[in-house]
Image 1: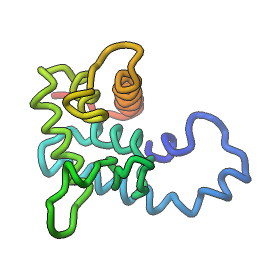
Image 2: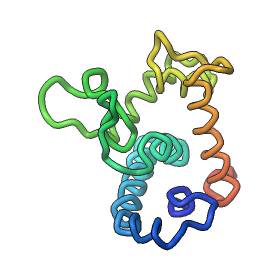
Image 3: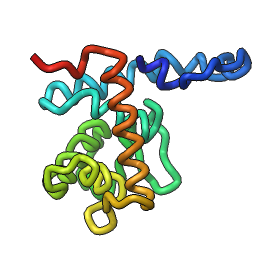
Length: 152
């Protein structure tokens, strides 16, 4: 499933595959780490995967705004002042903080996760609304393609 997310539903060209195939094992490892960390905390692993895919496509890149790690967290807000930061745990913590403010509305929670408590609004036409909708679309795609989201 992670591979189909990374390469999209299109048939990637040979040159595209040649350029990106060396990334696949590391990205799968990161995807697995995100899912395992989420599951250990009773956090929906599929939601964590959807967030991580949207944020970084399962990489440890640094964004132009300074977000780091697979879940795209800004260290000054979500990491300890001293010591090493586990960016996956920081991302899960950030989501839980957003969830506490999201009023049981997943779109609002994702909007807060994306833009922060002051700016995060799940309102059509805003960038954080588009972010939330895309994360939810990825979540739905994974659920539709697997039995991971089935409840007993």
